[in-house]
Length: 165
Image 1: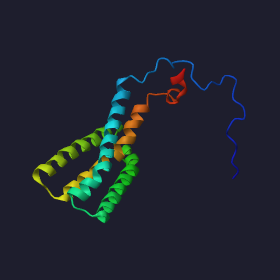
Image 2: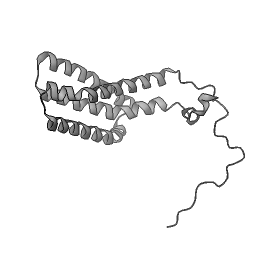
Image 3: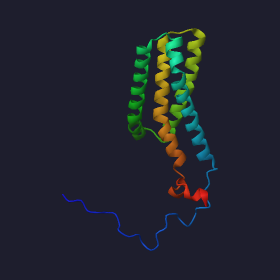
Image 4: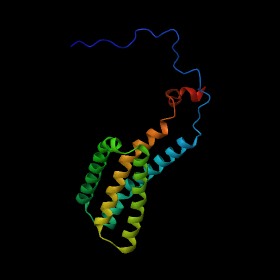
């Protein structure tokens, strides 16, 4: 089978890299965009906080050695990858908003569970479960949230050129 060239050698006369209509009507200051970017920023903050304090939590408070810490990080990374790969399959069965709300609910559940683990002095297994749930919530929710945030933005505004003009 021979592949045909699909790229045009020359651009049409009426080609413009920026759409001429509606460019000035769009804005980044709308509720949908700002709410989704805020949600994505908060979920990134949760994950990065976990990554930064995990050595203190896992080795310092839970008493794991370096090998145990490496194992926990490897398992949570595996959980994140599996959740990321399962997100498209989940989206076949539930809507984007439902998945996004579910991941936010998981973050809230983790906050409550970690508080209970500390107050009730529960075993380290509960902490490890919470770490895994943080990874699942971020991996499944971040892509959906950013997709929703950028869904109303046209390609022209996603490039830096309109910002400087």
